Figure 1 (cartoon, rainbow, N blue to C red):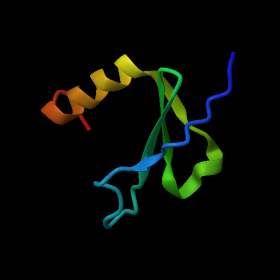
Figure 2 (figure 1 turned 45 degrees about the vertical axis):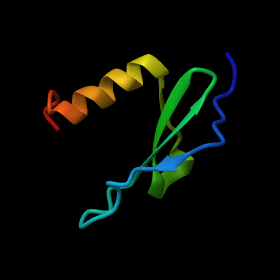
Figure 3 (figure 1 turned 120 degrees about the vertical axis):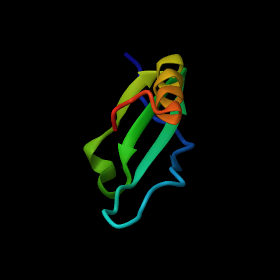
Length: 66
């Protein structure tokens, strides 16, 4: 398995706020990683890009109980 090393980590514009909830997403080789901005060394959850797009679309439409 290849190493996941995105060079384009982007912080969510919804990060921060009262509870300091900060997340970043980055892509590499058809996968998207999601990590905690305040604990980058903990690693990332990785998903195939189409699966990440489906989760993001569900979150945007309110289909997830977040």
